[in-house]
Structure formats: structure tokens, C-alpha cells
Image (cartoon, helix red, strand yellow):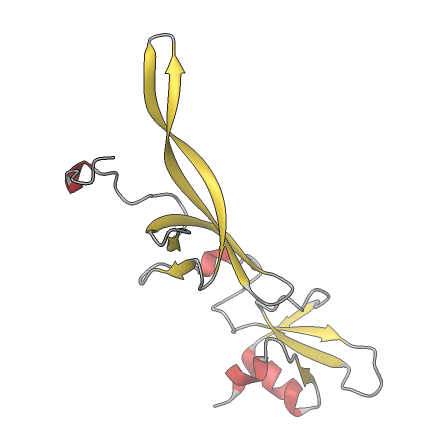
Length: 161
């Protein structure tokens, strides 16, 4: 490997349709990669799936050459994946109806010892059975009326003035 390569001859930042994020590789190097999707696991950790193009040798009858080979990798936020200032990640969450936290999901509960409504933020991984979405003002009204806030995503934090 030639460490003195001309920076102008190096490949440009990876470009695709999705936003870019910084991916830290196991050896500590960082590269920008296209974010395909993100999701929370059962422990609430955000996992990002990213797409990167790597050089790959292709042998043909006329000789060998290099072509990009696209690979998908996953990483945890913020351990391996960090946001890049100015990138818009809002399109990664198809269930979101507005900016994060602008929609509260309402889940019916069937326990008599607690309120019958459980409120979640729109990005809460616990809200698997939530059917209805309400705005911020309605969520505040529901909480004042006895609804219970999810203790994982804590939607009431965003409702305090």
C-alpha cells in the first residue's frame, strides 16, 4: 500500500440516496457510509445498517480490473456509527409522521391496577401493539387524565414546558 498517495486521486466520499454517517472500523479508522436504515433492539440500542463500496478485483477474458463491490455492514450508535452534521436522518423512520417526538403512540392496556392507556414516543421499540397516534397536545391531555408514560422511551420528558 502506498501511504503517500495523492489525495486528489483517492475516491471521493461515498454517495447514495441515503444520508451519510461516520463508521468507525475495528482498527479505529473512520469512513463515511450511506445509512440504509436504523432500528432499536430489545435493549433499546440503535443499530444502523450502512452501505459502503469497496474495490474488488474482476477477472475478464481481456484482463483484470477493479470494480466497486457494495457491502452492507451494521454498527451501534454511538460506538461504531456517528452522525454527520448537516445530514437529515428523519427519512430513516417510516413510522414517524413528523419530527421525532411529535407523534405519541397510544397503546391500550388491560391491567386494572394502572391506567388503561400507555403512551410511547413514535420511535419506541416497546410500542409494538400501539395502534393510535396523537399529537403533543393530546398526549399531554391524556397524561393529565391518567394515562401512563412508557418507562423506556419516557414521552413525558418532551411534553414538559
